Amino acid sequence: MENFDSLKKTPLYERHIELGGKIVDFGGWALPVQYSSILDECKAVRERCGLFDVSHMGEVDIYGNDAFAYVQKMVTNDVTTMTPGRCRYAVMCYENGGAVDDVLIYKFADDHYMFIVNAGNTDKDFEWMKEHVFGDVRVENNSKKWGQLALQGPEHQKVLDAAGFEGEIPEKYYTFNDKMIVAGVPCLVSRTGYTGEDGVELYCAAEDTVRLHKALMEAGKCVDMLPCGLGARDTLRFEASMPLYGHEMSADINPMECGLGFAIKLKKEYFIGIEALRAPQTRKRIGLKLVGKGVARPEAEVLCNGEVVGIVTSGGPAPAVGGNYVMCLVKADADEAGKWAVSVRGREIECEFAPMPFYKR
Amino acid sequence: MIPNDRKYTREHDWVKIEDGVAILGITDHAQEALGDIVYVELPDVDSEIAIGDSYTTVESVKAASPVDSPVAGKVIEVNEALDEQPELLNEDAYGQFIAKIEVTEVNEDALLTAEEYEQLLAEEE
Image (cartoon, rainbow over the protein chains, first blue to last red):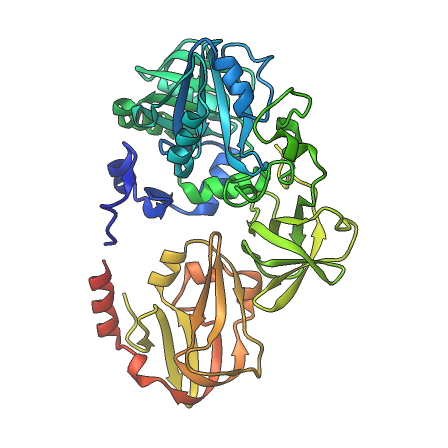
């Protein structure tokens, strides 16, 4: 057996092994890449329901009378119109526009917000957030206190019904209810996810995670739900053309280049990185479908009309729509109607321009 | 069960040498570790392979895995069925070959018997 002793573990680690999860080192975390088969797990989410352990995600709370002004300064999106119980996607940037991380913001009150951050970025993000605190603002890294499960798929409501709950399941996309009880476990439930499918994410106390996971797995039998690993999560988000930090976006790839204009409010007076994002961009994110046979992976060169114009940032099969696709970062002036190809181990594979998202429910 | 009609490598590939032709494939353990196989990059027929060359790349959903050849020679046949149905390798790794090579040289040192391979698997567990 490989040794995962040095890796961080979520409260569900033993449970993953029990369920036959194939454990891998994911950015310092011991997590299952799959339980049964990545393709079967993807199919379960698209057609029925799947359950993911996403307890590795980081949770940073922001408290204080200046919390609103602080959040406005830290992120690209505008939180002025956010009311308590809403979620909003945004990016934290460096002064040069490069991404510190992409975050999901939960608003509890004018003086309390929570950022959900990428697991591997949690410490870095928290340091960055602490450095920029001003006035009456307190930031707390509460990641260890939370367990988080993602219940995703068209049948997720049936699973919740079977598990039993008290309180109202948030009906609108990107809203949440932090006073729910699901299968006897106090939870925050949000209508969010990273799969391109309808579903919810459930946050509970770390010590309740195993109980909640067991109850949902049991309840999920009514729809033939599968536990799903990181492999399926990545393929599902890829099909839905959602960016992944470290691939489509990074300290070197700003969110404007990544095509996240919807979450960047340049009319805001200020946020860190706004000047850089206001400037014209030299690169853009696009999608391609491989016409020739093969699979292209990150770092593969992308050619347009015979000239190298960029690199693949994510690539692989998109099982829900069929075929192999790539997302890539290319020169902003590359001709979308041009003749596209990717270079894989010295072989050029013909591609065609593919509008994103590749899969839309 | 590990078939004992062929030899194995430490990289979880199998090779069966008959009448100067090496039939190459990957083991059940290899397909299991790879997960769903979505593409097999087959070598060109007539191409020359040296010992240690990766003669094929097996693509699973998440990764590309090059497979090194324990023999040298000319590719005389590839398993065309894998072109359309790469998942056959998941279903029957020992029943599906990837390529056949007309052998000019074999790296005998790299080859394990079924028994030795079984032991290797046990050690890796």
